[in-house]
Image (cartoon, rainbow, N blue to C red; front, side, top):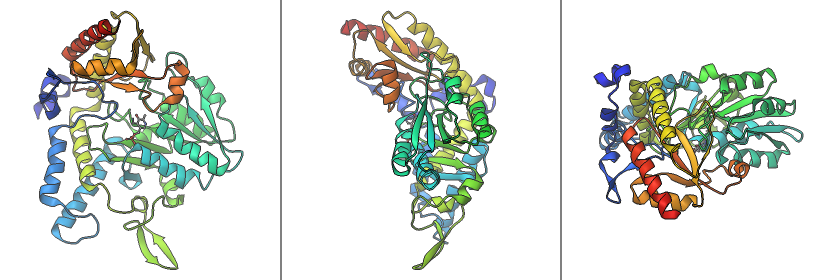
Length: 412
Ligand code: PMP
């Protein structure tokens, strides 16, 4: 436990030892997992928490008064409270759901759909993930609203002048990624939300790639909605949350109807429960969210400032090593950047690169990364993406670069 509390002197090798997946080999080589932007690996404490729930406490939440039922409810609501503390918001404003995609759709259908009308606009940025584009297109189609796009500079920095110029009176909502999943660009969301608020524009921040890698204080950002996913931050898949301002939650109709989200149901009409339960119909991912509670305990004990510093160090090393590779094109070199490097090697297809790297035990993602508009901006169909987390090592970076050189030689 000492290594956890004495943040400055964290033994990162011991931290890595908390992740059982690193005990395995891939294609006869020790696994190098550079795909954390896709999903993060899970520490033993998270795996054991989920296992323990199913072994000893499994029951549905909120409905049963028996011992297991109250244990499950207490653990589930306890996880909500710990998650809320982790991001500095009130637990009643934190809706637990399956992840960012669900969270953004909830805002699209419950907040935007009843409000928007022809002539209104939704403002997005060029670097958004499809999860922060497609729901808005569906809403625009049904309301007659339009989509506006703020552009980026070639280095992957959001063009703030273009963004602020696009904040015209017809814009009712701005959707912006906190951190780009392709470029790693960290957007100045606090400043952006302040500018939007001054103009009466509601803001939704997609925090999927921010929460796993840096301290996030949602209250300080000053947005209206903040969406995130649990599986990228050491938690189980199918977990995540939407934070929304109390006044929005009170005014918004439920997204999904069913059990648990009601106070009273009559055939003549239903009285809905208060938030957050009003938005959580049906049996939730109980074990998953209890596991997510264990994940934020784990990250909180490490300290997110320490995680951020560790990943900055790994990124600097990776950049240094990659500088020696001829014919490498890197997408996204913003000054404020998370440990994500999208790249291509001259003459090689992204999928071929990723397939050959896998033979060396290296897991990187190849494809469009659910960001077609961004791929179009750079004029490519796909890139390879190496995305790191605090559990990666300097030695892995060296092995990765050696593998990349070998693969490039094979493809030349
Ligand atoms: N937004 C961003 C920036 C992402 O990176 C992702 C996951 N790749 C999502 C949204 C969607 O998250 P999920 O699939 O967990 O809903």
